[in-house]
Image 1 (cartoon, rainbow, N blue to C red):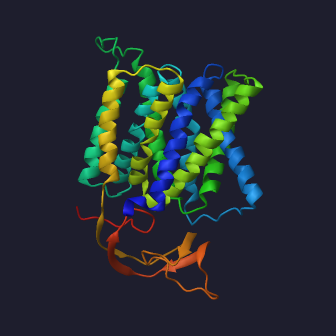
Image 2 (tube, rainbow, N blue to C red):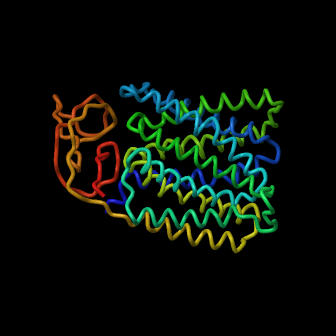
Image 3 (spheres, one colour):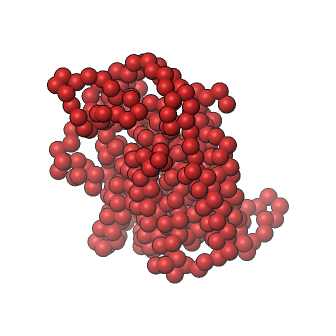
Length: 355
């Protein structure tokens, strides 16, 4: 079935790794400032992926024209600012609540993809997003304080910080989609090194100090797995699924984080947590069971990215001399084509929809 395309499996794996990393980051915040931890997590991802690419002898990929500006914007939003906001939110709220609140990223990603980047989002996806939003509101609403006049209770600010981080990651997802055809591990490595270095320098200027060797090593290791490997897999998902669908599948990450927080950090299971989980599970189910197929036309296109022969959807039927079978990357041309098959809004299916 279409939902088991490689991008879906990559999105689920990415979600699992990132979700498990959220409560671990909460544990690290006991001895590390939020700003410093954000830098260590991303630096760990960048260094780890850099070593992986060096051991593989992976070459630096060539971006298609105009793609560098999207990568810079993604690094600034998703790597420079969003992780700091998440760490501040985590420092003042239960990790299980913050983990489920991160589901808002999928909703915001889809809304931006549809509203600003013209990616198709049908009624089923919209209903699923609405369910996830209601669940996020349940988690963010204060239970022991009352909103009086225009004063915002202190307990709202951690949730607002996490939601703002979700908005910036949603922008990051849509920007990264524009460069998702490039080597995924290289994109994640660049983002990790740039964001990690920037946040570490800012944290040191603010007076932060490095933790002990154990917490330092743990932060770098969590960053490599939960941010570096997870982001690499998510870029693969963006390549195959588009931003809104990849975000929908990735929204399973908070459930992983909430389960880890309850099982290993002994955090309480509240009615808000259960109600939000039920609503979000319903929204994710609607996303997972979507099916999209219609007749569509592809205009002529030239670009470079990793692809394979033979191509099941007919998009990579160009000739090779000598013949080549399997994964490879080179500059190639797609001729005009009209056909019908089940598809996602990936790099080869960014066509307009009449409704």
